[in-house]
View (tube, rainbow, N blue to C red):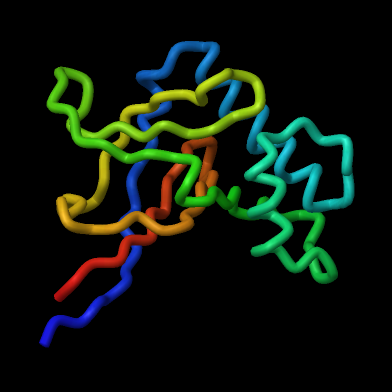
Amino acid sequence: MMQEAEKTIVAKIRTDELTQTKREALDYEFSEFQAYIRGDDDAELYSATKQAADAYIDTENLRDDHEYPWFIRNDVFDVEQHDTELADWWMNIPVSQVYGGVNVPINPHESIPDDAEVKDSKIVKEDGDYYAHLSIKQRV
C-alpha cells in the first residue's frame, strides 16, 4: 500500500550568480513582504504573496527585530531541473517588480524527486543569503 509523505528540501538561492535586477527584485519583494505583514496595506507585493501572508502569518505576535519567511503558494512558482553550466536546478519566483517573475539558480541540499509534488513553500533570508524551503509531497 502506497502512502504519501511530506518533507522540506532546503535549496540555497545562488544570489552570487544573479543579475543586479534579479537581486534587487528579490530584495524588494522580501522587504515589502516584511512591511505588509506589519500592517502596510500599500506594500507592493505580488498579489498571491499577499494571500499567502494572510494565510500563514499570525500578525498579532510579530517581533520587530525578526525577519519572517516569505511564503509563496505552490501554484505561482516553479522548480525545474535544467542541466546548465550554472546550476542543475532553477526556481521561478513571482515578484511584483518583474512580469513573469525571476528565474534563479538553486542548490538543493538533496535531489528533488521527479514524482514529488511541490507544495506551498517559503523563502528565508539568513545573513544576506536566500534559501528556498521547498515543501514536497511524494509517495513512499
